[in-house]
Image (cartoon, rainbow, N blue to C red):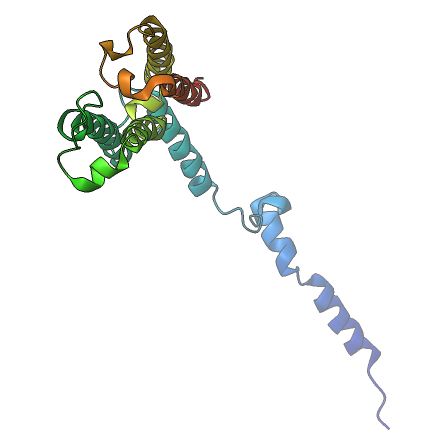
Amino acid sequence: MAKSDPSAADEAADETADKPKVGATKASRSGNPAKSAPAKGSGTGKPLKTAKLSRKTEKQVFRDPTSGPLLTPRTVISALLVVAGIAWIGFYYVAVRADPLSGAEPTGPGFIGDLGDWNYLIGFGAFFLGLVLAAHPSTPLGRGRGVVTGMLFCFLFGLVWICVFYAITANPDALPVFDDLGQKNLFVGIAAMGVGFVYATRWE
């Protein structure tokens, strides 16, 4: 059996010790081992910062009624509901409703005449629903001074409606729509004030 040369083994061990480690060399070149490799999932940090800035800018735009969008799908739908509600009540009262004192039959579309006083629920319901939908930052009434305007309008509308009803209680036929609703006029005023509280929750 051949004997191993001790001098050759010593030389191999010295060569191994003289070779620098790859990781240590890279760390020494960077000057800071902790900065040699970025943390997992951190990336450069720029996309996250950009996303935060874009959301902040969008929020500021919605709060500013002068720079926010004036015409959005929500604004159009809200306006259509308000106009449709007023038009429904007006059309029923003028063209379909039969005068209860004359005893005549309702005219116009039969299905509207068959609804009777439910037409007021449909009309006022569409009107108030449009105002509720408008209480959103994507509409002019849902941000900035628009919120205060919508809130005051609804509160004053409901208060004036109830006050007028009590003022004409002795002569309920003095005003249109009031004469048909009777005590239901109180529900109209209270509903308007309820919509005002929706705007109050948006006030900052």
